[in-house]
Length: 577
Image (tube, rainbow, N blue to C red; front, side, top):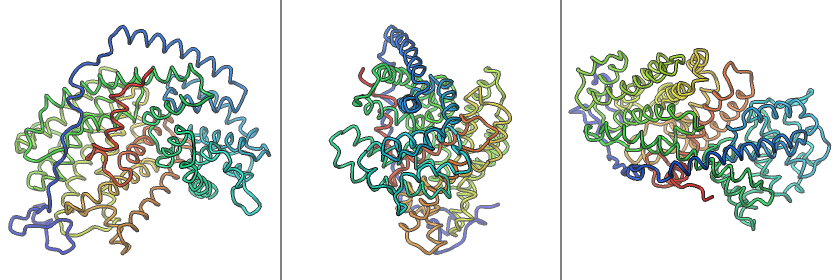
């Protein structure tokens, strides 16, 4: 289809158009700030080999001590769930997966003991809420007898059907119920009531607390509850909180600090390798338009999908894919020349290196670098002797680039699409399926045909994930893109479809996102043909969007605020021992 077929005059255009040259007149061209980090990782880590060896030996000693703690806690239900919660929140769960899984299975089988107790005080609510959250996080439905799983919270209500005011005397009790409430399903109205009740009281409590660590924990929870938080990011904060807890276990605390720093050193090695690749490619000097230099930020967004040390190679490959996708996105978003963008998209459809010869030089480099990255993925999977999911990944990349072209064509068309017209394209151009497939390819134990088939089928939990990510993205980038004159967005389509204001549209879409989270919660608790670890990758991808697009800010593009602090905690600043 010729470019002129896409373009027509309209006062409702997504961009201003120059009718003489059929090209977008962009109201403003953004100037992206330079990378904040490239020079920081140019040298090797100062941590010597001898220190690493000593720390590794101490970590192994402490792991044995924590395993003993788990063994000693066995049989004491409340002690078990408290210990599991601390281990998970300190970022140590990957060391004790078998022990935790065994304990949670037994706790689930015996949950009626706690859930059916008639005690309705704060202590018991804390226990019930904590157990409920841990089980649902692990994928247990938490149902018993003929009751629904959330009926267990009814005993904490008064005769008027409200949560008892006496519960507010215990801050931790309210915080536990708050965190549990975000594991609810659609239709579990008591969980919505719990969210409203606890949010109201936590907001009033946070300014009155004498304990700064507890006040900080509550503030973080109000910004992002645990179900929407990224484990690795939360672990850094929770280590500081746990250190001030009078009930802390010193062995557990020391292990958390040493392990965090040890894993951080692994991340530093990975990002140095990725930056060497980025610098050798030198792609920024080869393009006639500006792109975002956000390799380090992209790596931080990628690492949370599978943050455990053993997935190093997968993180490196996935970051390279993410980075090239970012370049592609900038090309289609910023360049505005369909005569050059269309051949690039068509080249990806054919996936033939010979196609590069027909491309302009600056488009050729984008195409060639993507092929190089995918070739690296292929070599790695063959070397590891695992199932090669490359055909699935290539198909998704084809769909993604075709979607980018369709999105660009919509921008040139002059018509604002309805939400129904826009979403099918918008859900493809977030690139989520490519990243999920690549993340699974980077985990040998998950890289199986049935897992790739399941992801490619886009089941409900994946569709929910994509839509949440798109909504977070569009809400987070809306004001900046509107200032530039780009108004193709779920926010704008929602405004048009419903004849409502921007703030009303944002509220409507945020409400939709909350409902989608409840659907995801329920899907995780159903019988699925894939391991829970695959579902956690999907959850983590969704959490990424919640974190980096929080408060209406695009934390990837504008990374010199909250994102800068996240990068520093993950990659730069070790925890003092």
